[in-house]
Length: 503
Image (tube, rainbow, N blue to C red; front, side, top):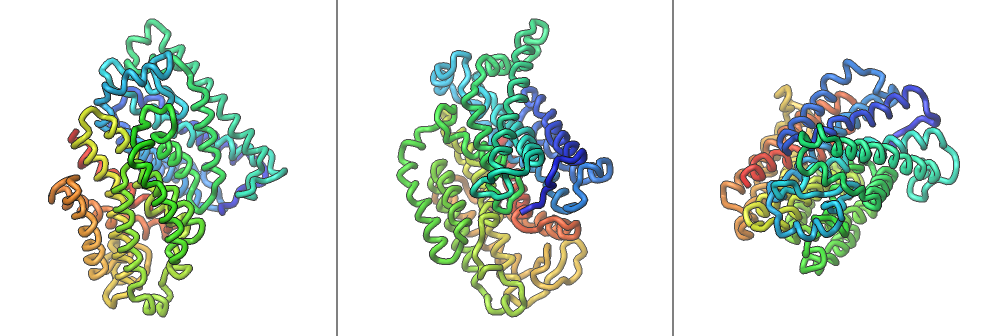
C-alpha cells in the first residue's frame, strides 16, 4: 500500500490542487469529437511523461519518486480509456431511445452518473458527459478524500482499509459536491446568456436544464468506494474505471438495455461460478477471485461471448504458466504464489476489456446495431487477445532455452528480465493470440482481415509493453499490473482507431 503523509503539508496541498486543476481540459469536451478528445488526452499523456518531470519537480513526492511519477502518467492514460469507451459512432443513431430519454427528466436529459444525457439537435447523445463525470471524479473526489485524510488522520478507520479514517473519507467525498455545484451553475449561466447560447453545442443547454443530484451523489459514492478499495492498483485508474464500467448498468441511465433484465442476466451465475472455480483450482487468490467475478459479471451483462473470450485467455494463460514450471522455479523466475494471480493482476489482465463495455451497450441501443456492435465487440476483446499473447509469450519464453533480448538495445538479457523477449516465446504467444482472434469467424463478428487485425494489434501492444516495461523498471516504476493496464490500453486504442471509425 502506498505511503502517505500523516498531515497535510504545503507540498501535498499543491499536488492536490494541481490534481484538481487538471480538470480544465474537460471543459472543452462539448466542442470536441471523440477522436479529437483522444488526441488531446494523448498529448496530456506525453506531457506527463516527458515534460512535467522537468518543469514541475514539486509535484513529485521525494519518498516515492517512481510510483509517484507513474500515478501522474496514469492520470491521462485513464482519461484516454474513458474517451474511447464512450466515443462510439453507435451512439449517434439512437432515435428510438429519444422518447424514453426525454421523458426521464423534464429538461430533456437522462441521468448518467452526475450529468444529464441530452439529445442534441441532430439526435445524438452528448457522448462526452459520462467522460466528464469520470474526469470530475478523478480530479475532485480523489483530491478531496486525499486532503481530508491528511487533515483528519485519526479516528475510526474503514474496515477494509485501515489507512482511511471513515470521517475523513465522508467529509472529503462530501466536499466534491462544492465543485459540482459550481460547475453546474456556471454552465447553466453560460447556457442562459443570449450572446453565448448560440455558440454552445446544441446538447449543452439541455444537458444543464436539470441537475441530477441523485446521480451526482451516486457518482461520488462509487468513486469514493473505489478510492478506498486498495488492491494494488493506483487510484488514478480505479476511480474513473468504476463509473465508466458501471454507468450502463445503473437504472435511469440512457444506456440501460434490455439485456440487463433479459437473456444476458441468466448468465450472471456464471460469473460467480468463475470466481469460485478460479479460487478452488488455485488460479486466483481470494481477492483476485472476488474482483474477477465482479468484472466477469460486467462482461456478461454486455455480451456473454465476451466471457467466453475471457475463459479462453485463462485457459491458454494457465497452460503457459504451468509449462516448464520446474525450470522456472529452478531459475527463480516462476510466478509468485505458485502462479496464483491476485486482484491487481486480474485488473491488469481484464480491466481494460471491461472498461470498453459501454461501447457494446451504446451499439445495442443503436437503431441498426449490426456492424457497430461487431466493431464494439472487437474493441472489447482486443485487450484480452493482447494479454493472452503477453502471458503465453512470457511464460513459455521463460521455460524454453533460447536467447532472450531487450528490444531497446537488442542485447542479450537474462530470462525473465523486464522487457525481455525471445523468439520462441514471441511465436508461441502470437499463436495464442491468433487462436483467440480466429474465434470471431464462427461468431460472425468479422472476417479474416479482422482476425489479422486483432493479431497485429496484439503484436504491437506487446512490443510497446516490452519497451515500456524496461523503461519503467529503470525509472523505479511498478512494472506489474500497471504495465499490463497500459499495454491493454494500447490494444484498445488501436482497436478503436481501426474499427469504430468505420461506422
